[in-house]
Length: 621
Image 1 (tube, rainbow, N blue to C red):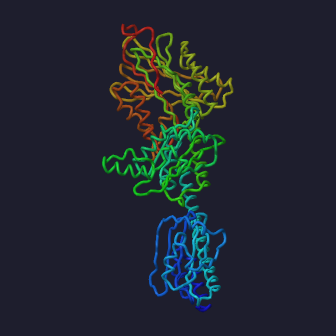
Image 2: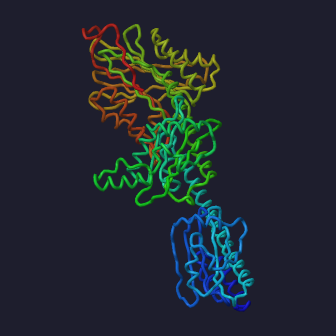
Image 3: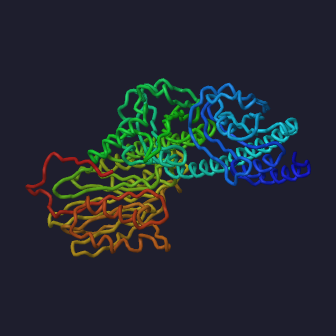
């Protein structure tokens, strides 16, 4: 037989090739040729099997031949199941004449060669399948030596396959880690609940699965929120399944708080919209060909794939509570299905992002609700005054702000406007906001002049030992018989009101005073001026003027020009327009914006048009 030195050299080359190979089949030439050079060997044949009896591949090389015979198939050979090895390789000698074609697909090739004995080594490659490597030998062969060489070759093949699987697992872990990191960044970048859920679905397709459905857990049961699929037509089908399918709804309800990811396939999908996908796809293809309409396609393979459908359901749990579930639809080989560990990790990250969005939404509603209760629900309106207000929360997650405003009627028929800003945010600021607004409102309704009202509020803050200061401005508007109105203004460290005249000019009401809540026994001086018909008074907080563009300029620098451009518009349009312009202008700054606008119509006291009793209109929010 071939010399041992020659075989040793060949085995060394085989090990070197195995260290570089990306597929086991790449070793074929380095395995077959040295074995075929062994004395008495006339044929080398290898097979690859899956699921015990499915022949996937057969390769044979005969002595004197330059090219191998290669058969790639998916043929079921039930009788071959008895050949499946255990954990250790098994070497067997069998007379060629005794081989049964029903269990030995190699038999036909062996009979064409002079060898009388088949020496074969069967071995396990992984949990999914096994393989064999054998030679046909004649009487001149040293069978024991041949068996040894087969065993050594198999050792290299198994080691090569194990290495390939290990490198594949490492590469997949790296890809999974990268996907999870990207998923976290994408999902955490939004605090909108529905957008976060849509991102969960989009990130996973097609990297993880062909389709995905996401449900939130509500008190009445699972609520469908998002679905996606590599096929647009099948995405529509998934959306319909997510909303209305009773089989899926029952499955999600049964899952409850089960933390383990469950995979379902084959008979487990009977009665579901995912059953018999391949057949459904065939039928759909036929229907598409005849009708040109694919809207009825089931969620399954796109194009020519006919892999069995598998679905997985993972519970989304965050901070000890279930927030929903994510269902993946797979139409790919088993080897490409994600692991349960990966899906658990993805589900955990998704659940935290969703829960953060839900908590943000709850807090946002709480902040807006509290802020709403700190503002008047209605503003007085008569034919003399066109009143409106606007309030824009800078960032609800920063907690409730300290801006406030109000408008009240006074016993003498005048109207008092007030606006203020408490330093800081949060519960303490909210409490101080409520105290300030209601104190000023009560005093002004009783007819107290603006300066006295601010002094008494300052005294109340000092008595309460308030830890925060606030700014405020109070303006009374008293109609006069000549059609003008007297504007009386007091300010406590607050931005000065602006007056938009009917001719389009803009002037500032010059008044000032000390912040409220800083010193005891502070008095405030009033400033008076007249306004005419169609003149408009604008009160605002510093969130408007301090909106800053990217270049560093403040909205305050262009406010007079922007206000002048609104000449002729009603109070509601002016208030909303200035708020939106400031929002669009600012690249930085998240302070709340409050505006209170009053336009004097010029109707004098005692005119027949003055309605009684006073009407009320809801204020802008």
